[in-house]
Image 1 (spheres, helix red, strand yellow):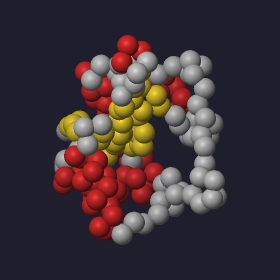
Image 2 (image 1 turned 45 degrees about the vertical axis):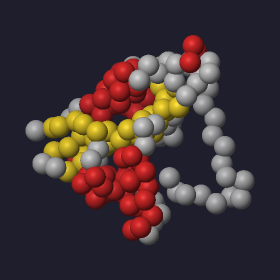
Image 3 (image 1 turned 60 degrees about the vertical axis):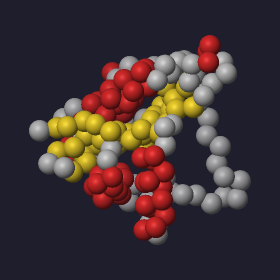
Image 4 (image 1 turned 180 degrees about the vertical axis):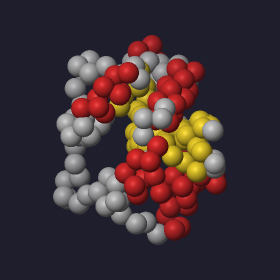
Amino acid sequence: MRITRRAERGDLASLLDVYRHLNPAMPVLPEDRIRQIWNDTLASTDTAQFVSVIDRLVVSTCLLVTGPNLMRGGAPHALLENVGTHRDHLRQGHGRATIEAALKDAWSRGCHHVFLVTGRGRANPYVLSFYESCGFETGGKTGFVALRPDGTSSNS
């Protein structure tokens, strides 16, 4: 049975397994750095990690990051990042459930909009139609990405 909720401290290991599945080239961080990032993520009022869990294992996740905004009547804006589902659990509703939980949280925070940028849409048109079915629109804004000027990459 699927449970969709905010991530908890004990989800870290299986969350990292999902991330490594999605990006095998993901750099390996020292354990103390991983713990610091995880603790910061869980403690921040501006981030919310959502997970879909089966038998206490994370199978899908997304990260909602919100920020203050002086425009739009002061309504915060949000970014949905690191959206992914383990391939063994695709097309079972897990991704949709985590996105719906994140959007519900964003709307409860009074966010004006939620941005989502994906690099997978060109390689897999299903990804674009999936995000559209979750309520995201293409063509409303144009996304840009600036890379680090020193040329290094985090392989994310």
